[in-house]
Length: 69
Image (cartoon, rainbow, N blue to C red; front, side, top):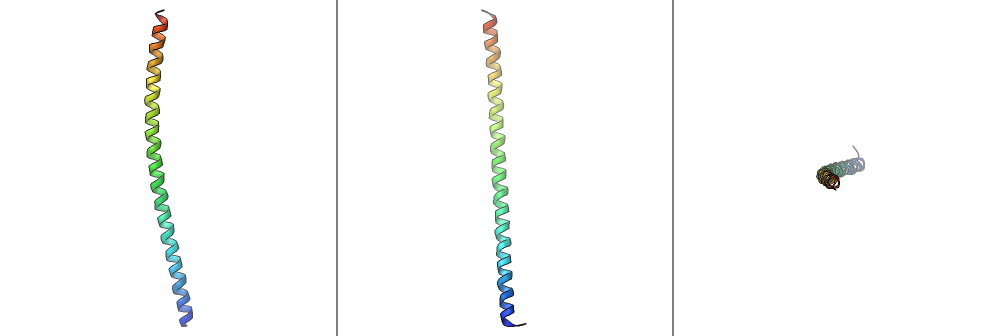
C-alpha cells in the first residue's frame, strides 16, 4: 500500500474514532441531563401535590367556617 494512502487512511480512521467518541460523550451527557430534569420534574410534581392537598384542606376549613355563620 502506498505510504501516502496509508497515512490518509490512518487520519480518516482517527477522525472517525474521535467523532464516535464525541458522539458517545454527547449522548451520555444528554442522558444525564434528561435524568436530572426528570428528577426535578418528579420533585416539582410532589410539591404541587402537597400544595394542592393544603389548598383542599384550607378550602374545606373555609367552607366549614362559612357554614357556621
